[in-house]
Amino acid sequence: MEHTQNQAGGKRVNHKAPLTPEQQELAARYHQTIYSYLRDKNLNASEWYDVAVFGYLRAVRRYVELPELQKYSFTTIARRAMDSEIGNERRKAKRRIQPLSLDAENTEDGLNFYNMIGSKEFLPFKQEDDVVAAQYLPLLDVLTEQQLSVLTMKAQGYTYREISEALNLNTPQAAASTAERGRRAIKRAEDKRSNALKASTDKELGWCTPIDLFMECEAYARRKQALGKLLTGEGYGESYLPSLTADVIRERAFSRYTVKRYELEAAI
Image (cartoon, rainbow, N blue to C red):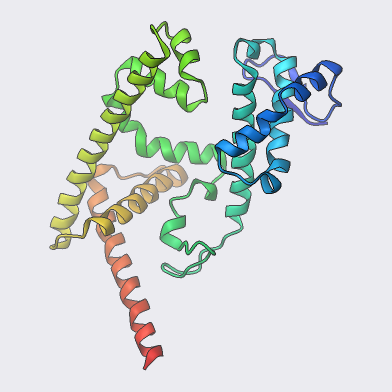
């Protein structure tokens, strides 16, 4: 029988038991939330309803059986649960994609190896958290304690009204402004870090890399470094990144050259 323990380590919720009358009433009352969620996410109801509804029903059970959740609105809990369900389904679909070469298009959308390596769907959820943390945690040092708290809660799905109440901010707009200042600070730090890496990488290569190619290869190199640290414990630090990024750029340039050469030979 399937159970889920709440984050406080207390009461368990049985997700396979029939809905109680109270849960049935709640599910019926807010049923349109599923359709409004799908519209907001630009998802086709005929395709995604059967996925979202599992998250919705999980939220119904948890909301009734875990009183600590009832300090939040039910729609907030339901949308977070549907987000999780949709994300899980997309991860399953993406894991079925097997990249074959650096530049070969492997999906109907034209995605290739370099597009897909940056996709979190290729890792289990907890591992993806660790990889993202390895890449972006250093950037969080530029945030104030309040900015970090607001952005953390926002990422967890809380509304600005809920955040302002939890952190004793004056208004929801104050919480939104704090979040925006934090995002701008992170973006400035990220740009500064990227510019420094490009200068070091270009020096190692001996040429000025086009910015679009560099940005693509930087993302790949940083992710590769984070994955290496996760899997082996060896991350080599920022000092290793220029060499790693330069190698990725050389490999990418060679791959492009190889594809073009074979295209030309096939046309002759």
